[in-house]
Length: 203
Ligand code: MD3
Ligand code: FE
Image (cartoon, rainbow, N blue to C red; front, side):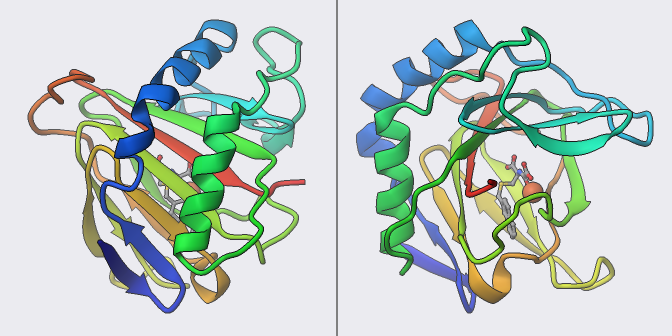
C-alpha cells in the first residue's frame, strides 16, 4: 500500500517486512563496528536519539557543526560499508515511489529509546537535493511530523510503524520534519526502541 504525503513524498506501508531476515543481521554487524552514540549539537545540546552510520559517508555533529565524514569520529576508521541488502531495499523503495536509479552513498541510523525525539528541521547538509531520501522504520511506532517549507507551517502527524518506508524527493525534499517523543507499547521483537535507517546521496 502506497500513501501519498505530498507531490513527491510517499509512505510504503510494510515495504521492508519481506527483507528483515537479511536486514536485521546486517544492522547488527554495523552496530558491532560503529556503536550507537549520542552526538553534541553546535548549540551545545546532546541529541536524544543515538546514531551510527554505514556507507562511504556518515552524518556527524559536534560543537563545530553538522557534516558528512568518511570516518567514524569514535574510532577514527571508515564507517562500515553499506550492506548489499540495504542498497537493494533503498533502491527498490525509491523506484516504487517513482525515483529510478537511486544510488545512496550514506545511511544514517538513528536509534530512539522512549522519550527520544527529533525537533523540526530541514536536511540541508547534502550536496545534491535532487536525489530523494529513503527512510526505513523499525521497532516501536513513532509519530512523524511533516511540515512545510517554513518552520512555522503547520505540520501533519503521520504514524510510522515497523517495516514502513518513506520516500521524499523533488519539491518535498526540503520540507521541515521531525519525530515526536517516542512513547507507546514495546515492539514484540525489537522491544522498547525505534531504529530508523535514512538513506541519502550526500557526496
Ligand atoms: C522529509 N530522521 O535523521 S527520517 C534525520 O525518523 C531525520 O530518524 C527522522 O529526520 C527519523 O534527519 C526522520 C524521515 C525523513 C528524512 C528526511 C526528510 C523525512 C524527510 C527530508 C525531507 C522531508
Ligand atoms: Fe531529517
